[in-house]
Length: 73
Image (cartoon, rainbow, N blue to C red; front, top):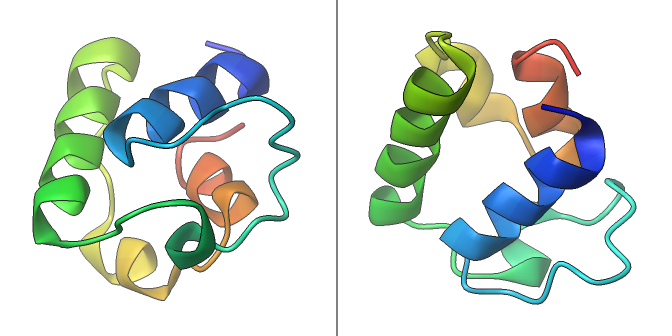
């Protein structure tokens, strides 16, 4: 998965429009980042990227680029 596809997948989780996302956007500014979104994100990373997200690092993530860095993008 490349960054644009990753951003689109995260936007889908957040029920946001993926058009024009650059990665610098704050997660809370583009959608509803709540406990359900976090679970959906962890599940997406597990199923689509075969990775486990570090919970402490996820807690500190503020932007889309921070989320991408968690999975090596």
